[in-house]
Length: 174
Image (cartoon, helix red, strand yellow):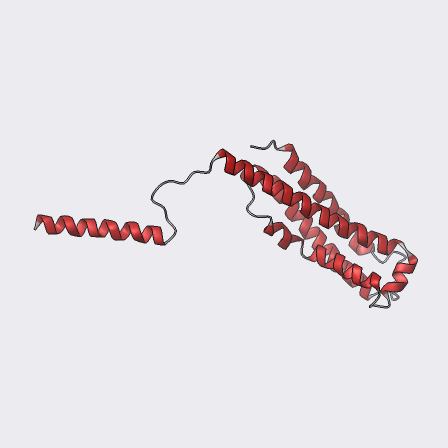
């Protein structure tokens, strides 16, 4: 009887252990080595720099397009090379958050940087939507600058890009 009880107890323990492992649990405590933390931070910093560079290229491209009268005239044609480039820049801004997420998990020391980067994306995505709206209203706007409404969120987004990078670089690597 005692042997049977012991066998049942062992079977229950085995089932619980296997169940915990199957559900993603672990028996042994997992730790992250210093090298893994350092690699994750480096990966995130590099990804953040690339993200920032792509957003700045889009902002610079939009700025150049809207600074030239000939470019504005070409935008009204809708299928010009200028229009195609502008759409690419608009899509870059619209995908800001997606690109930021693809960088991967944010190491704990870089959480402030992620917060600034997320705010930058909200501003840049909003500014990008306002650029699309401004282009759809070209020729119908009373404003001299078609980007009047988009300039504030785009400028804020650009400022947050810089702050996000500074926050990431000012934290010494692990």
